Every structure is written in structure tokens, then in C-alpha cells.
Image 1 (spheres, rainbow, N blue to C red):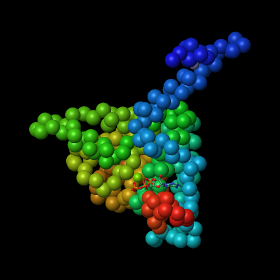
Image 2: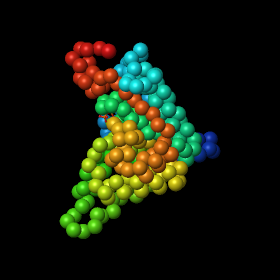
Image 3: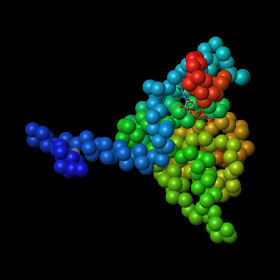
Image 4: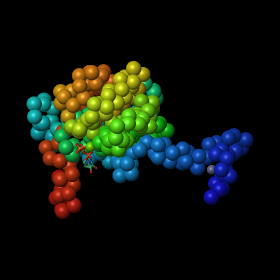
Length: 243
Ligand SMILES: Nc1ncnc2c1ncn2[C@@H]1O[C@H](COP(=O)(O)OP(=O)(O)OP(=O)(O)O)[C@@H](O)[C@H]1O
Ligand SMILES: [Mg+2]
Ligand SMILES: [Zn+2]
């Protein structure tokens, strides 16, 4: 269908001044979302929808001086600041967010992605277990691993989000590829957000010292904990439980 306002030219003239037509902006946004690989379900997660009720005040995660609520507030603020700053500048420090299962890590990373995509920034959202599946699928018998396009995109993406860099079965090749992504992003000071169930000590066991050391330089370290998996609470809420 041809746009009534601009005849698909992408701009229209009003009182002698050229304006970008909204159809052009919509199309550009659609393309950004498609290229981002952000799963459809996660496209609805926004900062505004982030509910703090799952992070209680006055209760403390193990060995921590801040309450669940304070930890969540600090990490939420860091995520929002990261998103806002990344609109203004294309280089800068990223975030590493770790915490227990169902604590909102993927939610928060998706909110960052949506904020950036809405505001004209290109983002690549990689679900690490899916990437490892792709790597495995590309392996064929005795031949070399084929180059996987997404790995090249990951190095160059203006903003990269690695979701669930966890306790997976990393082949030596996959481990090297993750090293290479992180090393390249660090060398170019490219904004990168990582979330994981593992703390840095545990990450080191899976990915090695060289990669972990670079993550520390690439990212500021935050955490997000809940006393109870939010998935379970949501499930109970559906059955009339309210927190
Ligand atoms: N702060 C929040 N407000 C509202 N809903 C949330 C919040 N955090 C998480 N959720 C919801 O809870 C569920 C689990 O959240 P999420 O997937 O972000 O957890 P996670 O920390 O990434 O878990 P995992 O470690 O298993 O990957 C999702 O359905 C998500 O929509
Ligand atoms: Mg997750
Ligand atoms: Zn138009």
C-alpha cells in the first residue's frame, strides 16, 4: 500500500519544509527489530513495566549488605543509565548482571534492548544457548566448523546483549569464539551487556581466565536476586496469589 502522506518517498513537504514521514520511521524501526534477533515475547518488556514487588525490603541475599530491593534498584538504575548514555554516545562501559534463576535478568536486558531500538539504536540480542546450538548444528563430520554469520555481527553490533552466558557445554571452539567476541568488543570499547546465573568466579571455570578478565574490563558488575523465582510467583498470581 502506498503511503497517502508521502507517496512512499519517505519525506513530505509542508510550508516549503521537508519532514521525515512516520511511515519511514516505522519501517526503519521494524527493520531494527528484525535485525536485533530479540525474541518476540521479550519485545514487550520495558523499564516502565519493571515491578519491584518481587524484591523485598528488609530481607538480604546471602552475604550481601544490601536488601533484595536495594540491589534491584541499583541494578535497574544502572540499566537505565546505560540505555540513556548509549543513545548519546556509541562507546562506553557495559554491564554484567548475574543472579539466581527467575530474578529478572533477561527482563532487564530486554528493557535495555527495547529502549535502544525504540530510540533508533541498532542492537544485537544473542541468547547464548541458542548460539551454542547454532554452532553445534554447523559442525559437520570431519570438516572445519563453518563460519557463523552471527558471530561476525556480534563483534560489530553497535550494542551487543549476551543473554544467559551460563553453565553450558562449551566446546573449545565455542569458548574461543566467545573470547574473540569479548576481546574485540573490549578493544573497540563497544557497549556490551551480559547476563548470567554465574558469578565471575564461576564464569572463569567455564570460559577461562582470559575471557573473564576481559569481561571485568568491558563491564561494570551488577547483580539481581530474588528470594523466590518470579516465574513461580507469576504462576501463583495467576491462581489468585498477590505479593
Ligand atoms: N521486575 C519484573 N517485573 C515484572 N515481571 C518480571 C520482572 N522480572 C522478571 N519478570 C518476569 O518473570 C519471568 C522470569 O524473568 P526472567 O526471564 O527475566 O528471569 P531470569 O533472571 O532471566 O531467569 P534465568 O536465570 O532462568 O534466565 C518472566 O516471565 C518475566 O517477564
Ligand atoms: Mg534469563
Ligand atoms: Zn509516508
